[in-house]
Amino acid sequence: MTLAIALEPAPIETDAHGVARVAQTRVTLDTVVTAFLEGCTPEEIGEQYPSLQLSDIYLVIGYYLRHRDEVHAYLTERQRQATVIQQEAEQRFSPIGIRDRLLARRNQSR
Image 1 (cartoon, one colour):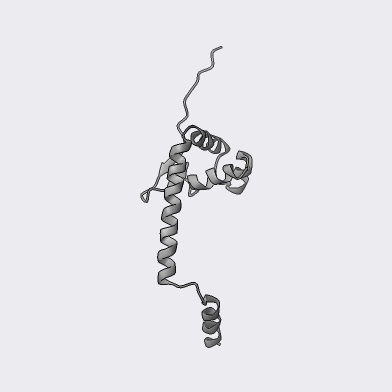
Image 2 (tube, rainbow, N blue to C red):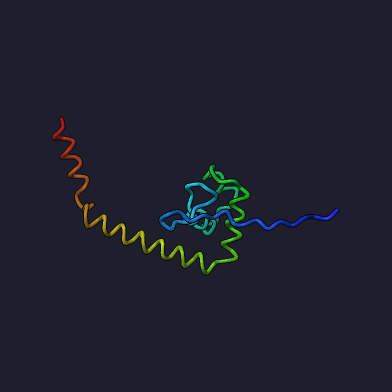
């Protein structure tokens, strides 16, 4: 008997905003790769994100291991974008004194 070898494409899709997600889920590539780099096994990642199939997690990790430079460049860009968004949000809505403002608002409604 001969084993038929089939190539499995990585179950990674990019949404309209350029975010890479795993296998038609809301779980991002960033999430899986970061968990893996922090020492989680594929099984532990599957426990944390039950919407993922274990086989898809292994394929995504395999993709990462074969394309480290590209994935790290993608992760670096995502982090840069997140920093810009956070700075813009903090400029619009200052987090300084938010607890006091919320408590004052709550006290006004009483």
